Length: 351
Ligand SMILES: [Zn+2]
Ligand SMILES: [Zn+2]
Image (cartoon, rainbow, N blue to C red; front, side, top):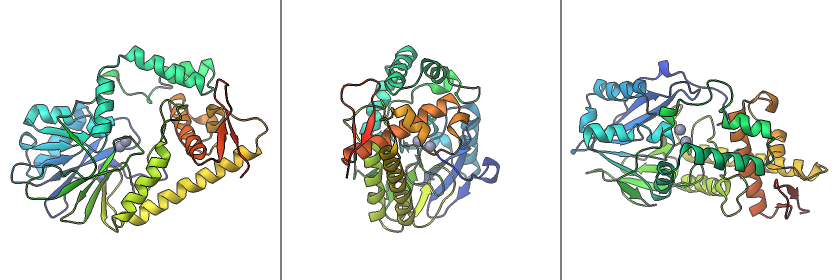
């Protein structure tokens, strides 16, 4: 994620947001993002949570204690609907299910990824990643550095890297979540992950946006493996922003940062940000003498720190983001990949 400013965890408190909705900030230990905002929605059959937070003892304390401070009991939670499979959202869902017997619901596309992750060994994951980095043009030293997790502090402890719990329920676009007496509808917003959903509380004009639309930062949009040409996550993300825009000026309840009004306006702003980035990248590709690799493209682009100062793991994420932008330009017919070369290289087409 790119960032400009953040609110420290200490300034966030469990809150009653009115209308049978509460928020609990759940810390993400060692992560500059700070916290996940977990929301609880009232129902006669027990509260339903939107996301659960990072799987860590401190995070569990914050979630169960925060719900308790609001007069809610974590053992009475009816269900957890997860906006996407990332560990700062799905991580604690399994623990909540264990304590309360809650169901876990997720979009079917992310549920499929969770099943894949549960079946993948650490070694298999590392091999997949090394091969991907090589094909993207990373040097042997950089491949080793990314695999090693880079400098201390960038890589979560292995126990926290474990795959999320497999959900009991799979959602599709337009499905109503099992929340008795209320209307909470899944809006499929792929991009940040293939199965990301926003949740529209239709009886209150509120939209739980997960990581899709945040008030200040923008979510990471990558493509894995970097050189695949059968999907277009950034193209999907831009369409998902249009989708949210069409819902109108709802209040946004995001999973990070803070609650904000008029989700439609912010969706337009983020789309504009990416269109500018795409235009800039296309112009750069038109000027270079040799078609660059994905890794060289990432080094050319602007990040929140100079490329030379980015730790290895963040370079890997930047390469994923560069690859997603290249893929969108390719899908639009503005660039093409040079045929038959490894690592893959991209060149601008005359428009
Ligand atoms: Zn995420
Ligand atoms: Zn997140």
